[in-house]
Length: 86
Image (cartoon, one colour):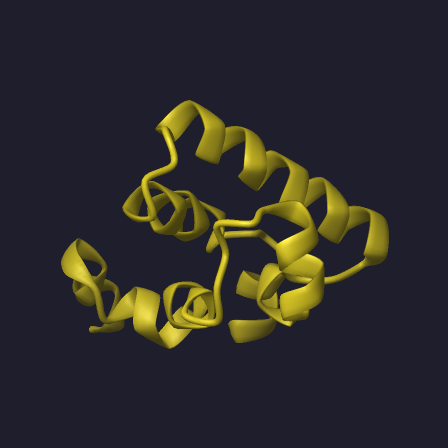
């Protein structure tokens, strides 16, 4: 299941939420996430597999704490997604 989730960019919305929490307007966060997904597709990578250097090239708002936001176990443990673990 984890392998299937990795290929679907299901954590892309978490990246948008992360950027908004850093003060980025949602429309700009949406555009940045689009760039990240395209970069991942072009380089055959998942978002969580990008290095900090790669992420920083795509947005200066991203710091090391992004990995906590895009970790699938953390995503499932948050908010309404907790029910998915049952």
